[in-house]
Length: 148
Image 1: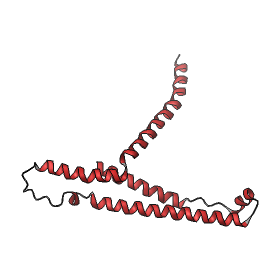
Image 2: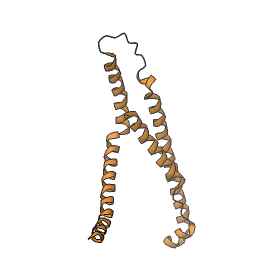
Image 3: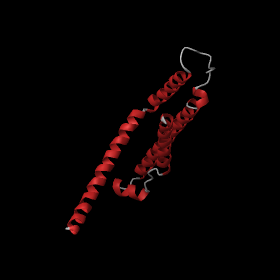
Image 4: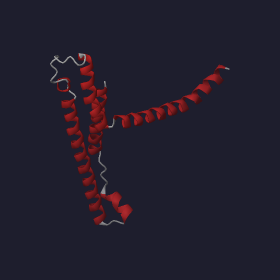
C-alpha cells in the first residue's frame, strides 16, 4: 500500500506536467499589443518566455519520469527481497522481510516526501468538506421551513 502511494504521487506529478505542457499559455499577439502599446519586441520576448516555461516543465517532467521508473525498479518485490535465502536464523523470516520492505519503502517515502503530500491532501479534503457543508446548510434550512 505504501509503495502504491509513492507511485501514485509520482504518476500525478508526471500527469500534471503533461497537462500543463499541453495547455501552456500562448498569448495572441493582438492581446499583447493592447497591453504593451503594440511593440513587436514585447511579443517576441513573451514568446521566448513561454517557450522557456514549456521547456522547463518538460525537463521537470522528464526528471519526474526517471524518478518514477527508478521507483518501479527499486520497489519491485523481487528487487526488495533479493538475496533472501532463508538460511539465516537470527530473525524470523517475516521479520527479515518486514525490515527489508520498510527500508526500501521509507527510502522512497523520503525521496518523494510522502508526508508533505499527505498534509496537502488533508488540507484539500478539509476545504472540500467546508465547501460542501456551506452549500448544503442553506438547502437544509429550506427543507426544514417547507416541512414546518
